[in-house]
Length: 170
Image (cartoon, rainbow, N blue to C red; front, side):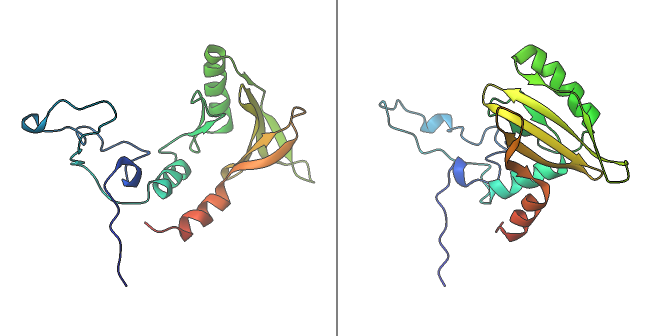
């Protein structure tokens, strides 16, 4: 069976989403530099290139808390799986005040015996309304909500992410 080597590019590099090995990767040696016409791209050397599945890597980084999950597409509302619900609330409120979105208070989720079994909070950004749900093991999922704050779709789910990672190639 013939394996195909991918063309070197940022899109096929292991570090595409995490950028920890990008410095100098596209630098063209001075001796090879020349003027280029509009729309013409130079042949970049990709000196730090490592072929790999960057999507699998970023999902694992999110689970591990090495990369925050961006909510609402703007980049300001970030949630880290290593933060407690209270730390997340404090961070989101600080950023919301500066960036113009809203964050609710934390609410406990109670089991049938009135024991706290988790927490949730809401975020309203210009790109939508979201609920974050924690169980006693950490951030469980993030839901997109309708205008009445009712969940309509899970956009991040810890268990499903673990399953996807397990099924992906490196």
